Amino acid sequence: MTHKSFLTIFFALVALFLLTGCHGHKDEPEPVSKRTVLVYMVANNTLGAWHYDDEDLTEMQKAVAAGHLGNQGRLLAYHAGRNDEPALIEITPQGPKQIKTYSDEVYSTDPERLKEILADMKKTAPAEGYGLVFWSHADGWLDGARPNDNRYKSFGDDRGTYMRLSSLADALNGQQFDFLYFDCCLMGNIETLWALRDAAPVIIASPTELSVHGMPYHQTLRHLFIDEPDYAAAARTTFEWYDKNEDFNNRDCQISVVRTDALPALARASRRILSALEAYPGRMPELQSMSVPGKTRYHVDMGDYYRRIADLAGVPTLYDEWKAALDDAVVAAYTTEFGIGSLLINTYSGLATFPIGSADDLATRGYNTSAWYRDVLADVPLYSAK
Image (tube, rainbow, N blue to C red; front, side, top):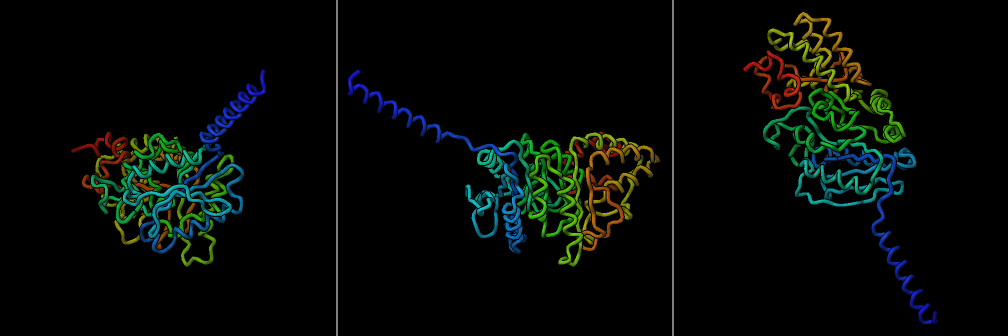
């Protein structure tokens, strides 16, 4: 082989190596972490105006700086606040790192925006498992035919627009999260959890209104990033932060951890009790309310409701079966003596539900469009009667 031929082959091999190396670098996937948690912060509302989003982002930064994510955890936040364009950021030990910005012409309460963010999360921070925290205002199961009507808000408040529960369920369909954590009010009711039961095996939520301070991220996140997340500890940490915090005038927190695979058994037990009713129970003013005193009572304690319904129907033994199904579903339930607005908590089962007192209640705030009504109550003779 001549010297010239050798150089020609050598440089060709070098060029091929460089080309291959550059190509490999360009297409190199993001490293897969153990767990990625996304906090979906819809803060272009009163919470953002009062800077509670900034407070919680600071707490997240403290948690990351303290090593609460472990060696293989990543924390992302989609932040849609009042003054900046919506952005997906990663909270790192060095500070927040902006990943992508988004046009605010699409509301953060649009299910298409939520699906876009979830796709970007998985592309940016692929992981063996994912957790999703919802941060904003919320109103539980309230739903209806008009997506942006104030009377039918379920989750979020972005400049006065809201996401229906059915839309939220559709956006989460097929996502398969390790857990959902609702850092917002009134999402710990059977109607909401039933609609979202296929999105995650565990849902942490409050059946009452939640303080504007929300989750203490700097204390709670560590329980969600260990190899086997301790969901009960995460809920208990949130509860204790309120119960023992001397800086708060009112110590008010109700929070529960629910296993969604146990909800079908609870649904069957609920249907059996309701099927024994021969007449609507009326207003039942003695029920333990989960709503702030003075507001319309859309949420009551589920355990108290079904106990009273079973007594009215003359089937107390069915309540015992129902309670066993509830205890199987509610992994942990914590409550202070009072809720927001000096709501006295005399009994607390961990879940709320809508109290149906008459046939007219079935159409209240779109209740008869809910998945819980369709799947569980529509077959009950009394409730399906026209």
